[in-house]
Image (cartoon, rainbow, N blue to C red):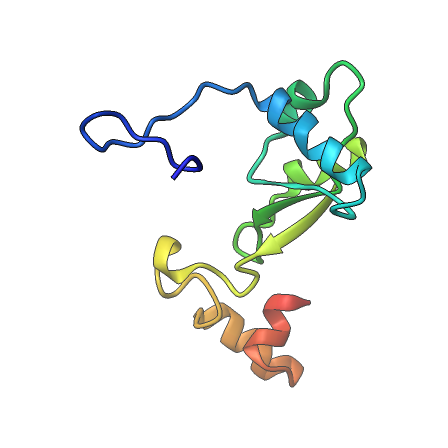
Amino acid sequence: DPMFPKDKDGNLLHRDVPLSDTWKALMNEKAAGKVRSIGVSNFSAQEIKDMTQGGAEMPAVNQVEAHVFWNQEKLRKEMQELGVAVVAYSPLGNSGFHGEKSGISSDLVGEVAKESGLTPAQVMLN
């Protein structure tokens, strides 16, 4: 399969393609009308600046883990300054990574939900 080239031992071959080249290819697909917008995931502000130097357009979004226990305040401010929207994944918390009491099942979230008449999910999303 040409999409997954392998060496003689069957190991996948990886190419060293600069991120800026990949980004330019995505911009070409957008210009051709194949996609409406392009974005990134888990990029720092510096990585976005490096990728877009030389006049490349900014990504529409940067998708990052964000929730009440990890609000990404510094990154959100940096993205706002760059004109890049932040989209949260795991907005209800990531108990698999941060522990089961760090998300929607947190005692704190439960207390706030009870006091405010909301569900724990509504507390996490607001």
